[in-house]
Amino acid sequence: MATKQRGRHQSTDKEGKRTIAAIEAISGVEAVFINRSIGGKSVGRSGRAGDFKLQGETRGGFRGILQTSKGIQEIFVRVNIRELDRIRDDLSELSI
Image 1 (cartoon, rainbow, N blue to C red):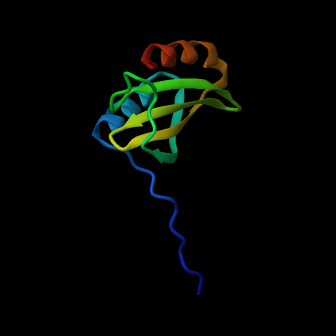
Image 2 (spheres, rainbow, N blue to C red):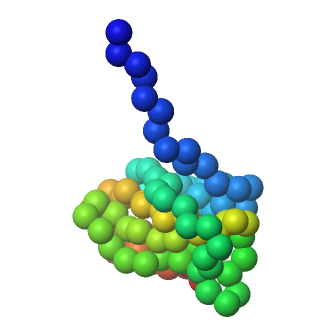
């Protein structure tokens, strides 16, 4: 009998959830994935929990980092490729 394997724990704090909800609300965003967490790191000098920093474009979307109360989390945003430029602009407005 095969055992069900658990995936990595992929959750965030209250402020991070608000930021992820704002990203998901952008028209053309198909999904937001939380990748690894790095404790004790920061998005910058003024980084507050919930701050998002757009890092760049990847195949199928964008990557960024999210400041949490305990460190940073890598975020991947999968988007509709036909709306890539507009979504980049919208994400840049959310980015610190």
